[in-house]
Length: 89
Image 1 (spheres, rainbow, N blue to C red):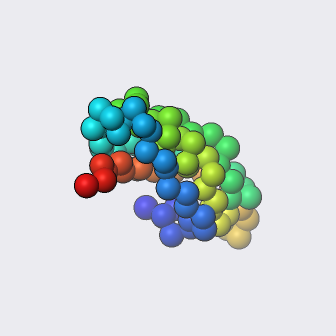
Image 2: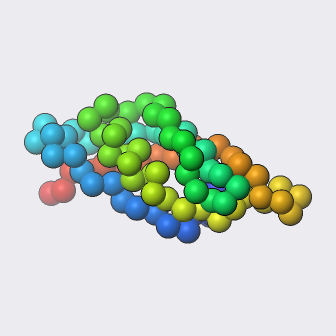
């Protein structure tokens, strides 16, 4: 929850063509590591459809956060991210 307000740049994932064709939608839960500089250094898939997971990871890796401060110094944190895929109508 805390890291939600620290997002500076959020890239939306591109819908995988295979998932579109198969009409797959849903959420992908990720665990992202945010560096002291606010970059994403690692992303781990916790749950979600495998056909959507790759696109979610690729998008989140491009996100940028304001550095998380602890006692005034930037620290590396892990944050849970949910990426939702909704089929266009």
